[in-house]
Image (cartoon, rainbow, N blue to C red; front, top):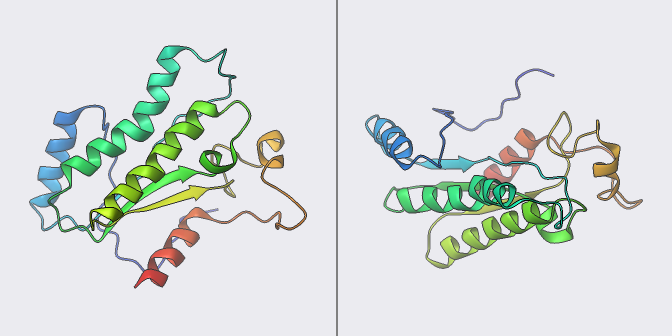
Length: 174
């Protein structure tokens, strides 16, 4: 559908393997060399579609590392930066559960807990427990089984655009 924009200044959008601490430190040093680091968005995730009994330990590690371990490292490495924003992309599966996504849900619950802990310490943090997205995501219109569990007669079938929702939440906070 094209690029979506909102009225927020976004200076750099970068990807980094947070499982590689040296790579993260290099990236942060490069970003800090241009001025203070003011915001961080952690939007990584690995989907899961297996029961607990079918989930291998390496899958558990990959799912937890991509969400919880990575966000914890990012939180630690940016603790002294003057951040206005520390945004974590969580999932409604942390709240409602999701068949076949138990480890993914647990890792996202960990993100929510990290955000709460940062807020308790007076640091910025927002964890958005995303439901299904329009135009893609882990539970997309291409996978009707994944969407069905989140829909009800009280909720519209129109799915929220992630960019528009984040912009709205951040602008309301100002």
